[in-house]
Image 1 (spheres, rainbow, N blue to C red):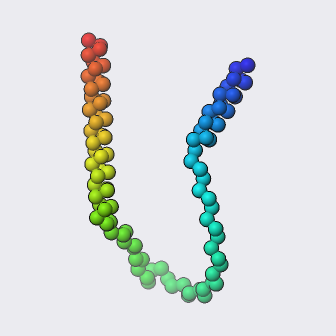
Image 2: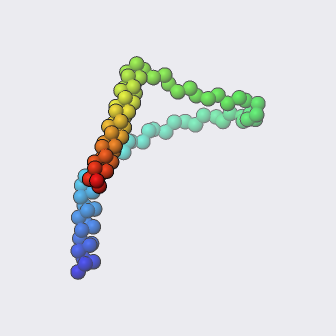
Length: 96
């Protein structure tokens, strides 16, 4: 009986998790085939310097959003630290 009950609970849990999952995005259609380009002769790696790609510059809006997010994250961390200190203080008061 316990095994049946455990199986039913697990099935209900799985069904609930499945029901809350976001819908899958539809697949993108395939792009049409492109004619192949001719191969280029290989050159030794030592003779050609490797160029590193530079990241795109952030726009003003992105900078402002990043700054706000950083500020919000710091405020949340500060509040969590204060809450933890308060809880510790209350626990010490209860012991006394």
